[in-house]
Structure formats: C-alpha cells, structure tokens
Amino acid sequence: MEKRKIKNSNIRISKLSFGTSALGDMPDTYGYSVDEGRARETINAIFESECNLIDTSRNYGFGNAEKRIGQVIQERGGLPDDFVISTKLDRDMKTQKFDATRARKSIEESLDALNVDSIGLLHLHDPEHCRDITEITSQHGSLAELFKMKEEGLAETVGLAMGKTDLMLEIIKDWPFDAIINHNRFTILNRNADELYNYAYTNNISIINAAPYASGVLAKGTERSRLIAYSEATDQELEPVKELEKICHKYNIPFPAAALQFSLNDKRISSTLVGVTKPKRVSDTIELSKFIIPNEAWEEINQLPYTTHDVEAAREYKPG
Image 1 (cartoon, rainbow, N blue to C red):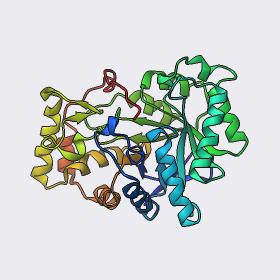
Image 2: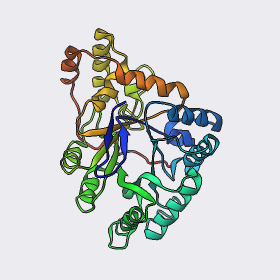
Image 3: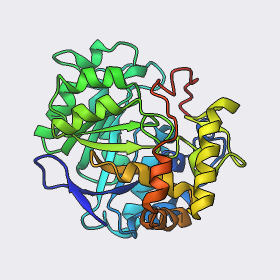
C-alpha cells in the first residue's frame, strides 16, 4: 500500500489506516459493545495487514482501547516493524480539565497502557470539549506541553485531532503541527472541512481524514442504517445517500467503496482513517480501497448534492 511522509519526519503512513474507538467498547456512541476477545483479534488483523497506521486515544472506552492494543503488542513481542501508533492526549473526563499537568499525565498513561516507550504520532484531542480553552492554548498550556513531548522524544510527530473545523483552523495557524485528524466533516455528503484541508495541505500539514462513512450510513446503506455523524438522519438528509445507492447499483459498485475512495482519491489527504470492529472488516476495507470504479460512475457521484454545515453541531456528545 502506498505510504506518504509526515512533514520533515522519517514517518511514512499508509493511505488507508484503521481506528480503534469502538474496540475500546463504546456502546453509548456506537450502539453496541465489543468484547475483549473480538477487539484483540481485530487489532492483530490490523497489525498483520498491509496498512501501517493504527489510531487510538486515551479516552476511547475510558482507556480500554489503548489497554487492548498494549496487550496485543506485548503478546507479539513488540510493535510490528514500520508500524505507527497514533494516539491522543486527553482531558480529564470527569472534570474536563486539560492543562499541561493533565497532558503530561495523559501521555504517561498512554505509554504504560500501550507498552511502548514513545509514540509515532501524538495528537492533542478534542479541545472543544474542555472546560477552558486557555488551559490548552496559553503559553504554558497543554499544547506547549505537547510540543515539549516531541522535543523530549516521547513523540516523533505531533498533531491536532478534533471535530469543529473553525476552531481547528484557528489553532493550527498558531502552532507548527505535523498532522491533523478531522472526522465526519469530509465525506460524499458533507464538505465542512474543505477550507481547513486547503490550509493544512498548503502548509505541509499531513491530513488524516476520519469517518469517511459518515459514522454508518455510507457503509451500510439506508436499509440498514439511518446514522449520519452518530445521529438519526432525516428523510431529506438520506436522499443523497439513496441517489448514491442507485449509482452504485447501476455500475455494480460495492456501496462502501464509493464513500471510501472519495476520501482516498483526494490529493490533500495523506491517510483515510476507518474504524473497524471485526477482523474481516480489515481485509474487506482493503479490498474496497482497491475496487476499480469507472470514470462514468465518478462523474455521476460528483454531481450529488452535499452540505457544508457542521454535521455534529447538534450532536449530544457521549464519551462511552
């Protein structure tokens, strides 16, 4: 699989990567549980695939995701060669505190849980949910602490992972990030992240585009899902999805392939991040990434209407 270099580092990440939030067991977010056995089987499948980036976070499943990844790493005798762990500094989930002291505690917890000495790509996570943004952006805040961690060798590259694109754009203009992760805001259905991605690409900040399936419906179709950005969609919001289903049926295209490749084909995006919860989903996703979609189909797909608003603006955030 093609790999792209992160800024001025020695790290190269595969165009397709896998996320582990659901593997930490987050039924409040996804509507189902994932037990430890299935999670570890899926993590092993990721490590054995041709992709080389696995993404997680300190707060996914309140630490479960990192713990399960760390158990697999320990059983395998270490992280596979050329594999990159992407994880995140997180606020205190009870108090929403996110100062430099909390950031330092977060990296210590991550290194311990993951059974590694350093992180390939370390992000500051979800500042829009913290109690006070100045705890993050001030001269001695958690962002400054993130860059200290890079200087200390605890992280080879550093990034910002969050949802709200307007705040994200403000922050990345003020700090020398190597990468960013944004989710649900750049799909066939929504282009809210377009300005953000233009700025990042122009300034050599690697872009990891997460949730190309809009959190469900673009993977499962309208008969099996009504979820867009973790929320129930209206009939009007589902109309473009139904039109995409018609195009895929017309050209005999696996439905999720179109949504996945829409992100993979964008030259600005270094890696497209897909969450998986079963071992077979790893190989299935790689196959979807390689399915040949004819140009005629893309011409019709690119004519579908899309929105530009923040699709998670009305979302009720649940951390579990």
